[in-house]
Image (cartoon, rainbow, N blue to C red):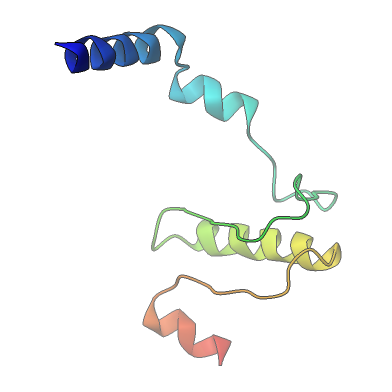
Length: 91
């Protein structure tokens, strides 16, 4: 019974206090295609970049992000998640 009350309270709080996907994206979006874009965080150990696979825009966006990180000398290593045909060019 105690677990039920805990999970019910957790579920209810997430429904009442949570924000929608649209609200989150509106508050936390960045235009990576601007020349003046600078990555907002510094001093991180790892960064994850997720996007739709198979889109050219995804590769352009990842490249713009990488350029920004290299310009500010924020990144030391880059491990791309990519398909085999694109990975060939990272050799």
